[in-house]
Length: 68
Image (tube, rainbow, N blue to C red; front, side, top):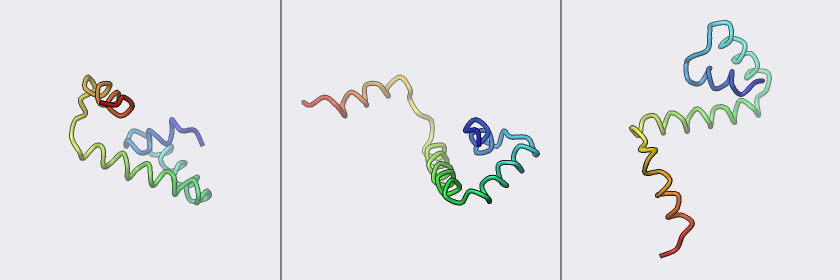
């Protein structure tokens, strides 16, 4: 399965036909379905946490790797 299709499916942007194809694929590939379900939970949590300040993100990442 194409990750772009899965992304559209998770974002609610897939056509009916494409969404049905992804659901069939997920039904047939249970271990992949578990990964997609985890990704869906994560993206939902990020979406619900509010807007992300992409300008501040590089500084926050730097703090993870640079000591005092």
